[in-house]
Image (cartoon, rainbow, N blue to C red):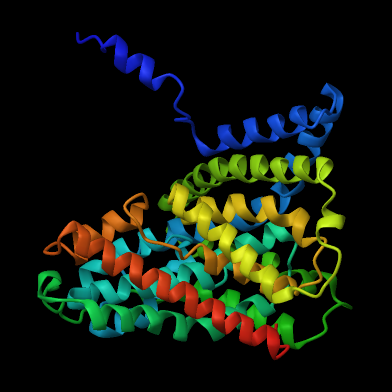
Length: 391
């Protein structure tokens, strides 16, 4: 048995090597105590903030992860270079760009790197992934999320593709082209159900039929798609999918609750209405949301944790800003693009599969550069849509 050196133990005791939920809980309590709130106020504010976003997130994450678990058990069709077109929707449907990339990489061949950036864009921009998760925390229940994401998807993905084509060299030579093979297109049917219901809800006033109205709104449509996915899964795999969905949801709900508690505590001690007196800086506000999300993503690496933590943190600020809710959602999603770095698990998955021959510096240059280009392109387009009154 080895014994740690005393000087190493002394040097490490103060390091904040704690999970994100623990750090957020400590931050929330620390803000309240530092501001002079009494014990009762700290507890009440923490409890109120922690529970504020959990209901919406449970309605989003559980059905989303159920669809992802069921989809991952089906072989997807191999279609050569066309895999880049299905990867964004696969990543959105699986609520995980890493899982989508791992599932599609064997059939992508030399298109792996391009497909990786397409999957990354789909996860960040398409319902039911990033926009619906962030929207749940911000209380945004608008079918327009689907349309704005589709508007942004192609130019954002192409920005990353242009970066790769300009800078990629022979040391990143890709694997040979995969042969075209058969697969199960029915794996994508939950997305068709989801899209059809959302389009119906966006184009038709169904308030007179409450049940139909519920299932044509984002959360209800997602539940319907998850039910379709569950019933379309072989009976012997249904329990496994449900357990996977519950396991993935439970950990994120703790992050969401803790982040929401920080936002509530900050609101209780900071006069936000004085800091944000008017509605004159909508573009600046969006850039600020983008920057906060980018900072969080850069520091801790996980896109999903960024979605879960940033939206509840900034909700008190957004409530005092007169900016379109859909625009606020996408400002956060676009900030979470920045950047694919070595502290991001996606970096290592793509590095191993698509950039095996590249040096560490080159791999970081390709992936971080492409993701930053995607983020900035999306932000410019979002500001343009805001200026034109389209969001």
